[in-house]
Length: 247
Length: 55
Length: 317
Image 1 (cartoon, each protein chain N blue to C red):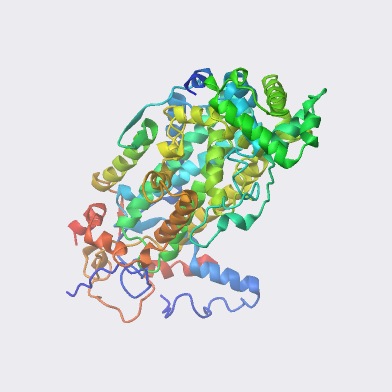
Image 2 (image 1 turned 90 degrees about the horizontal axis):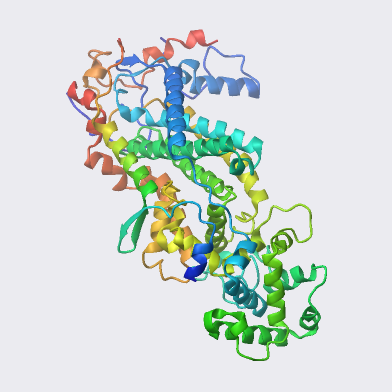
């Protein structure tokens, strides 16, 4: 058990060869997110609620959105109007988006009531909100790409809001060529990037403990009888233990 | 202008709407919102199956 | 035992929330959960798609409009010539109409872009398409030769006369000095009914085109297209922003954006769009920064729903 005084600061003794930028980047990454934190085999015992499944539900939905979207995109915009298989794939694209938002919104509600931003998890909350917002824009461009009556009308209505704040000239909802770029490349990349960052931050910080968790609680005491308030935040045994096996 | 509505290429039903006093909601949207609320409540009250404890 | 008061602060301190968890753990399989999630969601998606499908209402063409509502089409064409249509008076990014922009106080965001998508309704929607005909109407030369004032006078007079005529029927318009306007709108109606206006307006003679700005603006200046949308509950004042055609759920996540359009002071504001968008941007920023906002961030502590989420934990503390 190494006595790490200030985690995330100063060079660790076990990687003195990290003198290049790349080496330092690797050292930083491994310190922030060692493999056993990235792909954990256990979680705190309080992680026992259905409240914890909705984030994964949203990720599952996102994967189905991407798969169905690739099939739709590769077949071109007219396919789904004329093919029954195309129509079905279009349906799966729509419904996986509806499920994505359902899971994401319930996830957001639950994380609010769990005050999950506590203890240095601010960026996790913010990236979550950003992924929600970027997803809304991505879905909006999808509605504009239906190339049917609905998209026609949405384009006509939505231009006013965009023009009123001066962005309609560049983000032109009636220009299908522009919309393909946004919906098929830029926005999916943005959603994916923010979601990946969000998930990595969850892994880096770990799951937020119950709101009123105290040193004296059974689930904490269970592991450290006697210790109530350590002078310094000590590295937990199970976090330092695998450090030697990382390399 | 009512006459031209009939002539339009309306293939899908006009939809089912609920509402009063300027507030209307489409049935599909209503169901989605109700489902979210039900999932939220279930997540709070349903017991979670116990996993294997270690340590 | 001293128990620290539960903190809802986002700050990293030395409390339980800030430290890596040192208590008891349970087995957890991340990959397994991911696979189960993907499979369960996949079954849900396939099942719901098979049962409910997805709507695909055909788009409206200028041909369909001209065929279904010729009087509305003619009246709209006359307004485009007179410069009195919604598009003609829109302002940036389409044209430079005075005082047309939506301002918030002195801030005029709409003018920021300048006229990046220039639209001259008379020329782009009526005159230029007619000029592409194999035998353009003879009256086109008369319009082209006339002064701007003369053109506006003809078109405005005809537009008014159409509005006054029974059923807005061009055949029942009272006599007057309309110049070449009735002949031009009639020729445009013919062109639209034959289906050639759709192509000309979209591509402007080019082979490729993916920009539907002009066709859409022209379509929206009439009454036919917005009425169709209203019949499908898609108008802005019908919460249409959220709605999809039929009974399929739409963008229900836009509920707040849609709600603002239904209530004062937004509802009757001439700059409603600018106000709603800016309000939504502010509210979104507040959601992202919620951990900083006193009161709101304390709600989870004041209304302890978390006691249900972590009921096992609190039962055995």
